[in-house]
Image (cartoon, rainbow, N blue to C red; front, side, top):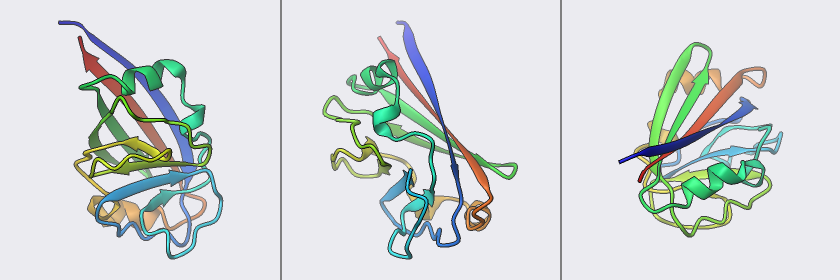
Length: 146
């Protein structure tokens, strides 16, 4: 059995209104502003949306049994989230990327069946992400065994 994998990197920033209290989703957005209603958002001002991801990445993520490892790094801290791809992902949204614990699909969905939502991230990391100058690197690695 061979494994195929590819990686994408997204650079984003914190925001004073980051709360990360949503129990089922985690979101990164290209928007620079964030209201208190955006309780799943962990980073703003992202340099990529779903539409900006490479075709190779999207093709692999849409394969049955694809696995996605999301690494979130900021201020010397790192969190990992494991999720799954799906053949029905559109990966077309030009602003947001949403990682979901459920299997709900929309054009903003990056991955499904995640083992963490925003509420599950370390509060130490979330405190750092309340600083608008705090840079965060999100590394997405999709892998499939064939």
